[in-house]
Length: 232
Image 1 (cartoon, rainbow, N blue to C red):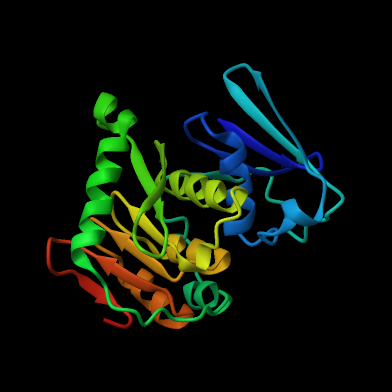
Image 2 (cartoon, rainbow, N blue to C red; image 1 turned 45 degrees about the horizontal axis):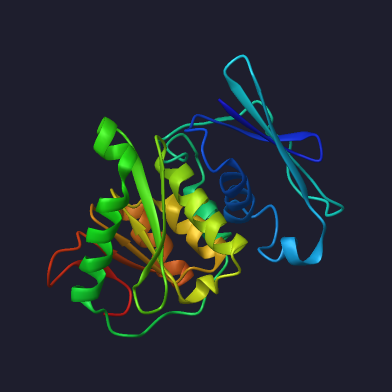
């Protein structure tokens, strides 16, 4: 269990792989709408990880205060996170809108990025049971690959790494080794990513979220085609 604390208050309990925990926490805070992506530039931030009884306590502190409800007993699983929610329309309508990317999709370069990501998935090659998320630049050059047993954690790590390195994430593609759920679209819109490309399918709710927010989903990516939600 990875327990995320901000200014001594528990933000989330995550079932995940205890690597790149700073990137995981930073990405999670941004992707879930707790903080703005420029907090590292505006505030001095301290961070430490304390391991105890097979749990990893990630503690971040700064003068920046969060606006959030107390969710300290909530355990984030690898599912979509909304299956039991009675108000899915509200979940989507509250998401921020982003500027749409209307540039053409280069399938040759996009598939090359996926090939590079597969070669970097050391955890999956060893276990067969890890998800990966990648970040490319505007030319689809692969910048970062992160793995985790939870696909949402992998996304948080990849986005957290890019933001930590001051990458203009609005020009990036988010690559997924599996499918795309609505909650990953939510993470993309909150962090400012305009394009998600996935090997697998996107859910109908993800498509709905993408149409609302302006995020473009490129799913079922093949050598020369895909199922695209948004501008083709």
